[in-house]
Image (cartoon, one colour):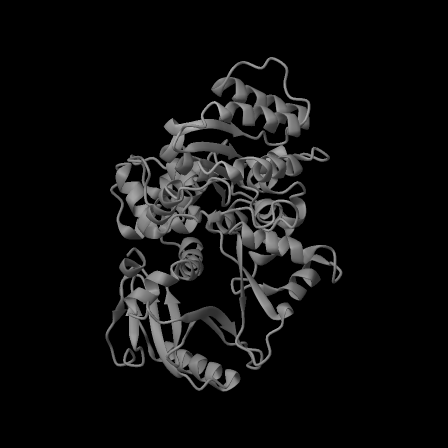
Length: 473
């Protein structure tokens, strides 16, 4: 466990399940590269009685062969691979019976969705194995894992067949927070300040594998050029490879992400359908749900008297995807592109947009900084449907104590100074929000910035401020 950075809540839960005294069926899911396999192997690798991982794009015969090889690794050699999944799980049951006196029998099936090839009846066989035998043994701990998050939710967690309500626990492994990212970089001998760490996060997100590609002997801009813009850059093919590993038909998902990248505040389902030239059907709702499950986008609702499902706003949340679509879809020819644009509008404007996304990804830290972490809240971005040009507010935190924090998010490499024009804009936004939503809550303007606010004659309207350091807590 000494090699695991962060993940304290997940580790505590897994230890609790391990010592529950009953059989446990745990579904662990999350986007590709987020560290699911690493977490399970670091915790339990030496205790596995059986471990197997599915083959991406493998046929049924290939998957059964891999399963058989795992059976041979942990038990007596079986030369002929099982003919089907019922036989495969029957062999697994025989293997586990030899360990029945153990206090805890830990099984790990990684990349579970890969085993479910067309017509294979894998889920039916898994259901038979669990319901017919494993669930009654009291000492089985089966951990299944998959990057195809939407498949995991629909076929395992929300299964309406034999596995319905059979999962004892589900665990969604999210990307690192800024705090965990800082811990990771320090553990790997990086001496970066918090602004550089935040900039790395705004490009790569809190994805452990991506962070592992950074080199401590290079500056962040040098790292980014090497990973994205150099000849044969290591991350150049990651974007399409990522979506191909998650979805059997990735193209519709890629098109949705490209449209969402154009609108920082997000789009409604109808707006996305119009932009893509789709009919009201066409599976768009399911695809949007899949992207939400995989942590690529989020769904939120604007403040309105009547909220319908069609009024939901879908907004891109994945940092790596947004960086790739902004700069790498049509990559520059300059292999030192990121170094050459330091402190230029190309980077500064982009970091300004990403700092809003960074704030949205760290709402618990913002609430803690405002000392409202014990108060029930709802948060969202807001855009007016009446003003022209349309007023937009980066972040609204609606509180149960009848106070609403209207948050202005500003990226700056020094203290941020509010001038007369900015002061009037902020007052206009707060006024438009209060008038259009008819809210009776008190409006408290908040400034979320990097290095705090410079005090001047226009700063008194701000009731509280949140800094980059607060996001790291």
